[in-house]
Amino acid sequence: MQSAEQARARDSSFNAGNDDTPGCYEHIDDPAYWERTLDDRYTIGVARTLDDQFQCMMVRGLVYIGEQNSPYPEEFDGNDHSATHVLLREDDEPVGALRIRYFGEFAKIERVAIRAPYQGRGLGAPLFGYAIALIKYKGYRKIYGHSQERLLSFYRKFGMKPISKPFHFSDHVYYEVLCTVEGGGRSLSLESDPMQLLRPEGRWDERGIMELSQDRDPTNPGVQPSGADSGS
Ligand SMILES: CC(C)(COP(=O)(O)OP(=O)(O)OC[C@H]1O[C@@H](n2cnc3c(N)ncnc32)[C@H](O)[C@@H]1OP(=O)(O)O)[C@@H](O)C(=O)NCCC(=O)NCCS
View 1 (cartoon, protein in one colour):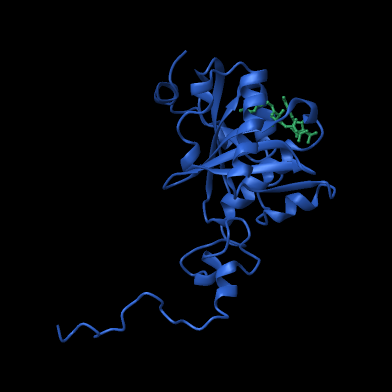
View 2 (cartoon, rainbow, N blue to C red):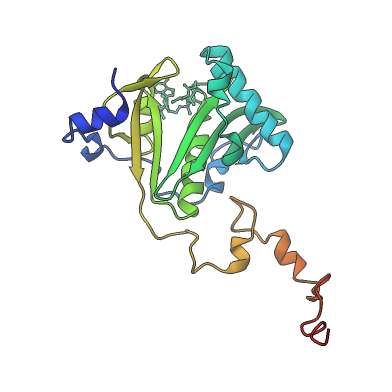
């Protein structure tokens, strides 16, 4: 088995991303859309608290370590504190999770997991769709991932197509998959209102705590008035 870099270098003509299989959901730019496709018991959102993050790690422990025998240091690889985690809950019960890491040119979706008793019930799709919409909203146009061979059809539903020959790590065969989404629509940029950029991740359409703070006049607490020490 060769590395992904070798695979691409050896066959530069290989680009299954050129096929015209449509991605069903890549046009959706509203993360909240996905929660609305589920009934009221379900919530999908960015993990905002340490407890939310524990729940994400628990789901991954069950799925990857419990079901797929992933070694602990490979599952928890040192990248969790530099990632955005997304959590899917049924009532108070954490049932699904994934993480997103951001690079200059693209965002990468990783560790997609639905707990075994909940798999095949249409929960993985909205969890993944939420992540794509979140990434689009942040302004990224390229969404990248590593798909286990058996899950290529799952990734294709989101327009993520293989761009490499197979390579392997952590005992599984993977393909690099990539989706390029359209610009426009809802998307954060330097043109965005600065107060919108201050809102909690994924809740960019709701007034945030910083907007509420604008009800207080700016008193610049702890800051010396300018020129206060000019005579010393
Ligand atoms: C992959 C995973 C996240 C999918 O979640 P899920 O809740 O079972 O998926 P859904 O029920 O939402 O199915 C969504 C679609 O993907 C398809 N799909 C789901 N699992 C699939 C599989 N193993 N192989 C092929 N297609 C699959 C479904 O058929 C469905 O297609 P449809 O819309 O045409 O009916 C889940 O099975 C899982 O956690 N697996 C173990 C962890 C894992 O391997 N993660 C991926 C690492 S790359």
